[in-house]
Length: 297
Image: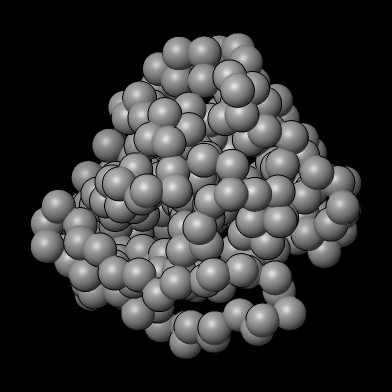
């Protein structure tokens, strides 16, 4: 008696599904490992022509004992801004932003997050442990003689933007924050970037991060946006950004309380704001921190 097609197709279909799920799990695990351990990008010191007067090599430590290295440009207006770079890069990624602010008189601290550049650490946690790095950077700047500790700002890009938001929500020393290409929650970012097959492709990535000790649920700046409590917020995003889609950035903006501003850069991808609109980008950053950090005199 011949077998019915359904009796053959059903087990075969199940085998295919199991094989696909297994392949996606292996792929997701490999992606997760890459997110935890990116290759180091060598740090290239800026040339004198970039107008960083008095650039200093600095070193400080995070609360969990990691050595963090960076550059500091002394303040000429008693205010300072800490700049936080993105994933798989280093402090030099934000030289444009640093130059724009330093030219306006702000003290500027660029530093390498843990497991990046010349800083210590061997694992990236996507904002979870990096919060300690940013807090240590604020500690360092607040003790500078050229800086009034009541005039501190934060800027971050991508992962650094998300981390800057997390720190600003709980650290009242931060009087203004700007974030470019940030994500509202780590889980949402993973689903956006790796969720083509839904949970089948995204959950193995998240499992790998959690298994390595990353508190995925703690990396949700969207939950605390109104904890900025009147401190000015500037969000920047490109309208063709595949890594931080406009809908994710828009959700951050909706969750925030006033005063807040959102600038969507037409034609810009992830981190392309300076390439597409350099003058306006520099002006918006200067004006944002001018109003927040210098208006009191």
